[in-house]
Image (cartoon, rainbow, N blue to C red):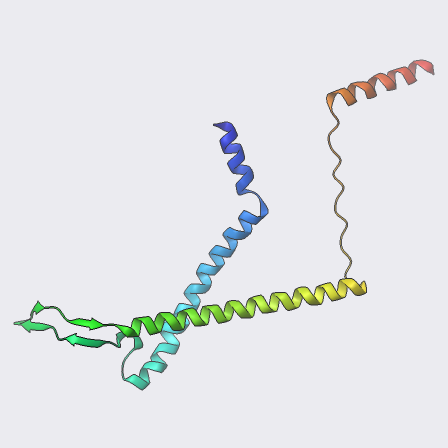
Length: 151
């Protein structure tokens, strides 16, 4: 069981998993911003043309029957306004993501051009020195002892 949790910890702390989690959280927040833009700003402006909010646009097949304030028969309608609103959400989110990706690609291209011209220097990777094994440590101690005896 310890190995399972150790493997899980190793998996979760890898860089790409953390990057994915951050991207997911930012994407969720970004979606909320775009939905607010669509629902609170664009849809009321577009709704002015139709006289009501786009989400309320519908084609009624049969009207609801109300007797004495009680609905006897429900309304049957096709709510195409909600679909139009979802399409506008999708198009805006896709457009903004396209712009973000385009900007990142342009910046990466500029960085590569600077690197080719020698403007940007890459930091050297830190050299990782492995820990010596027990045998190596023992042999080193024996060698040092032999050198000390000869003196």
